[in-house]
Length: 110
Length: 115
Image (cartoon, rainbow over the protein chains, first blue to last red):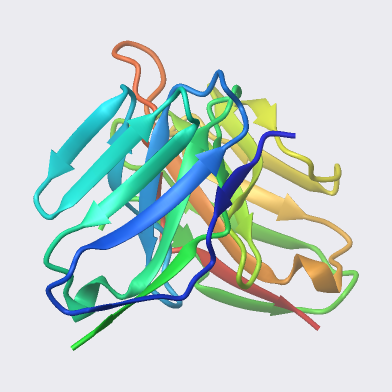
């Protein structure tokens, strides 16, 4: 059973700080990795994807992938209260599906 | 907005009834997947349709079935509803073939409550 693990949180950071969200996965053969943001009562929104080892930056977001450690993370710089949401880590499955973790709830305090 | 639409937004059904949920994929996307998200959980893969055929399925019983139409829109049907079927049902679309993409974009979801 392929699994994706995330700390459920809540993770609380002050406004302007860096929020660090972490995810581990069990299938060493996984090739594609995604971060979704989900506001309460809404559907998941794709914010980052990464396929190669290393860092990928997009605005205030940086995704980091370490396939040897089976670890993927999301950094949010200059965190804003509007970043408060649940962040879902997902790994691409063999059927083209996504395998999700349970999500980490992030709270950014003004 | 992803361009993926779902209907209805909310639905209340009684245990034992049947329900049909609908999804229109984003323009240019030919593959539709359905996910079930229970409260406090991540989405769970139900099945996927490509070229009007199911080509992937998660750990869901046969009473969960679907269709894909020539315009790539899709339906999810659930028979003999159970209380545990209460969840947010999400449709996601992506493009398969040509330049390979793995990214999936979700619609707004249908909130199903079974009483």
